[in-house]
Length: 422
Ligand SMILES: Cc1cc2nc3c(=O)[nH]c(=O)nc-3n(C[C@H](O)[C@H](O)[C@H](O)COP(=O)(O)OP(=O)(O)OC[C@H]3O[C@@H](n4cnc5c(N)ncnc54)[C@H](O)[C@@H]3O)c2cc1C
Ligand code: HEM
Image 1: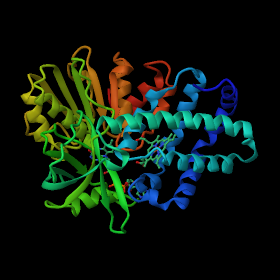
Image 2: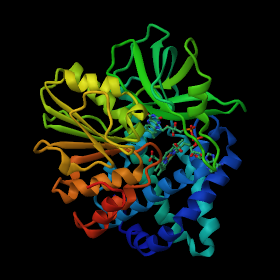
Image 3: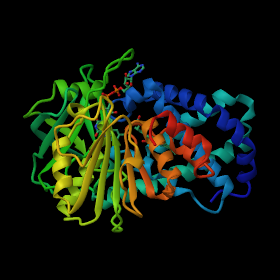
Image 4: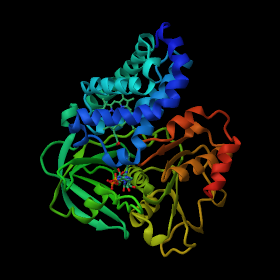
């Protein structure tokens, strides 16, 4: 809980910290990597640093955590931290590294705000930082111990036994364990971090969703090559798709991720765009393995049928379910050779299909796609708590969602219309 002494100080300085947190985050990372270049080797994602997305996610998380604390100082808003804790654990972040982040973050706060950081202000924000840090350390310790590992031992070696060209741009990798150690089970929807060495010698980690239920021997994930288009091509996705081959050994973390299938027995609707099909494929595969009898719907948007990754697998899984159906929307027109339950042109239209009552919704795809889909669902009366989303990058959305007030507000309808989802 936030102390009575710090609360008014944090409340009074939240606007100035909030206004400057983006610049603070930028200077923080620059300063930290200057002092600790080892953190960019195998821990931080330099693509996200170059794009500035990680800086925005960090800023958003600190601002939303502090806002929640000020509103309700008695209660730690721990639920805001679950996604971060899973991401940290998938990278093997250690408790002692929180001091390094602290020191560099506070250097950046003083660098940006100067004399405005009186000892009283520094003390109050120090308290916020350590509340957040200990909450994260605690959650991460729980994640490590549930898997019987330490931060240093989340990594395992896996041999590539199959590499399948799914589409022009997507490759599916099937990897097999190389030792006799127990393969830790994954929950449906989770991802692994894949760590590879780049040609300049630096190791780079990236997350990939698992696309098949566990069999105790293998893991499967699919990678879409990122084309730069004005910026550099994505380094890890291109390396994996172009260079990694059958027989190569890859370093993967254990599975983590907090967007997982709910087992409350409610119907499920998956809504995906493009490569966002991957966690849906993983969850569908688990549902088939579990012999689910629930109504399950997959609504997927893509450019056209040949661009849709994992289409054979997901269609076979949907058909294997007692009450499953897959509907697709293709930008290039309603042409498909495979037996989907419905094929439409354009963007996803929730009015075009009958959706099961009391369903839980899982979204994955580009951020504007998910924002539009979520808005359209809320406009149709779906409760926000029944919609979960997975993002393929640092979360730039969570802080915005926290400030939302009235479901069905105009802003959301407008974004739905703008992205063409009805
Ligand atoms: C939970 C989670 C699950 C995921 N699951 C999947 C999955 O199943 N399948 C999948 O394909 N992906 C998935 N991803 C995304 C994946 O982790 C990678 O982000 C993706 O493969 C791109 O990595 P990259 O190294 O190829 O691109 P990066 O090299 O990291 O580049 C990313 C972007 O940054 C830009 N950039 C790079 N350098 C600069 C620069 N100097 N200036 C400006 N811009 C720059 C690039 O042009 C590119 O647009 C997932 C991500 C998360 C977080
Ligand atoms: C209170 C302290 C911290 C906060 C508030 C914080 C916050 C965050 C947030 C918001 C993300 C993005 C999560 C997402 O949306 O996927 C993130 C990712 C990450 N954090 Fe932290 N973090 C903290 C401490 C640390 C520490 C101590 C380290 C280790 C040096 C660390 C390393 C990372 C890395 C490597 C990522 C992934 C970056 C990327 O993919 O670009 N963090 N953190």
